[in-house]
Amino acid sequence: MIIILKHTRKFALFLLLKSSFFAYANTTVFYNTEPDHIAVARSLDLYTSDLPLLITEPRETPHTGEAGTDSLQWRSKYGTVMITAFHSNAVSDGINEKGLAAHLLYLPATTYPQYTTTNPKISNLMWAKYVLDNFATVNEAIEGTKNLEIVAKKVQGKTWATHLTIEDATGDSALFEFINGKLNIYHGRQYQVVTNTPSYAMQLANLKNYVSFGGKLPIPGDPSAPSRFVRVATFLKTLPKPANLVESIAGILSVLRTALVPFGAVTIANNTTEDAWTTRWVTVADLTRKIYYFNSTTAPNTLWVDLSKVKFAPGSPILTLNPVSIRLDGEATVKLRPTVDY
Image (cartoon, rainbow, N blue to C red):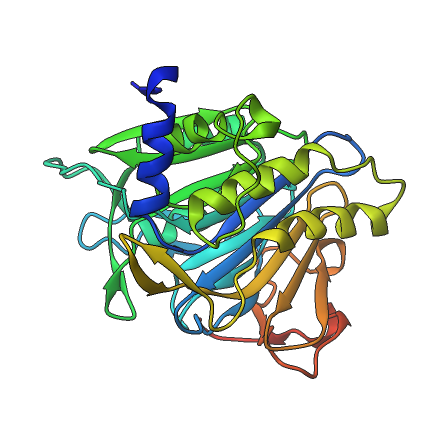
């Protein structure tokens, strides 16, 4: 059950959010108003580089859930383009050939269940990958994953508590969160913005404190997750209808950029100064045209992969490139190179 706080507690909630949570990483924004321009943009904010690799993978590629002896096993049904982290199998972002996008975001409030079964399990770091490999729509993904047993695993010496957001080419979306050991699924076109701490129920309740959503508070400017949520939701609400591809991508990026965190940024939490997690990269998944864009904050250029130009037939090679290279710009499909593992 998801509990929404009552109106009389809104201001107390606002104070709690502003005082307790500094800038944990990531923002997603989903534009699904116009059926010819369905796209989702995402930022990755982190205290260090996540050493991203951009990888394309064909159908029928075998995978394991990376969860130990009871790991789930599968072969990919769909071809994917994805971003991995720390030169590991952890997939943080991606799109498949059917126009389903998935994004793994940090959520410190996450508590996974304590499983006592021997059912097949999957690492939370492979959660997004499993969805991209196996499902074409949000509805399919919900039905196919709602009973998954997900366990937290380490990468780079750290256990990353995560929630998952997905979107499809019809404009549907869903967010999966484990709060107090229970899975909450927010399913519907109205769920267009996701950040991090606190839980999504609290984010939605807090949003009602602000002028564009029935409250009296102005748009906040700090880099905390609650403030980024409000800022992006506010500007998404007034985004004009795009006339073409250029306006579509430019529009959603213009909204996401209001939530990017500059190098050296700090924020205030509990009356102490905390480092904010810097934005490392941004992606846009054009779900209508099946094009995947990537921009690193350490490179001046934007590159993209057109999925219609990628060979996803079974037996095709797994391809990769370093997307933060300053030598890459524009259409990058021809610059992908075979890799044995990632």
